[in-house]
Image 1 (cartoon, rainbow, N blue to C red):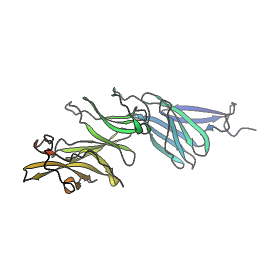
Image 2 (image 1 turned 120 degrees about the horizontal axis):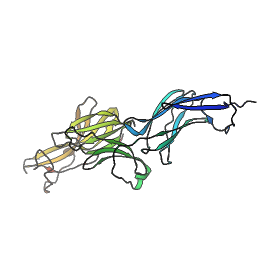
Image 3 (image 1 turned 60 degrees about the vertical axis):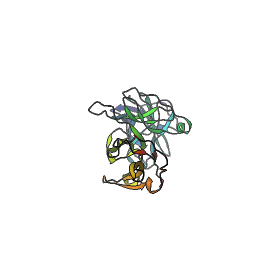
Image 4 (image 1 turned 45 degrees about the vertical axis):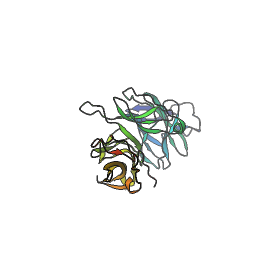
Length: 313
């Protein structure tokens, strides 16, 4: 009796697309628990993203109503798993957590079917020498999104569990040739498809910038607000809350103090203050607070100096 699987399968790779064809030549029967998914997965294309060489753009087509996903390793033997996707048809997913210049083995899994569609792909180079990083404590259980600056460059990184950079975006150098600005904070977007980062305003009346980069490395634009600084957080509806600056003049003392606000940046480009430190706390005017921080007026004293913001739904 003929076995239920093809007696010979030819696997060809052209332009990153896997083509499966069967003929009737005799061959040794495979393990009955594992077979090629030619009846369940028709085409697969897994290639490095052009602008982010350690990110893979995975696309595959399934012929079954079940769930499927990509399972892969990071180039050093650490297993990674893509998210399950539902149903028959075309699927696309971005695969993260890969080391540069490594051969990556991937597998398409179909839930409920003991089948295998496998292949390999090479990740690219970041194209620059990066400073070394380390992580300690609980950070070793997670990936870390962070801004990185040196005397010459500014980046946003994602570090894996072993402090290896697996995603690196370098801020373009200004046309004047000056050093790029220093990012203060970087966060994964709420929908998990991009990275947000910010640059602090140079002074009370100067604009700050919050930029967005897709996980595949494309710049997605930026938003600005006067006086934004240090930290921000993304809110529902594509809004952003950022720390801002405010001053208050005390006529009896002839002194001006610098405090902090929380400003919400709306989708239409407008902004509104939702919190002001002077409305909730009174500064101790018996203390001479440090001055020289404010570019526009070095006599202004730096009082509340808030550095962090978070959001709890």
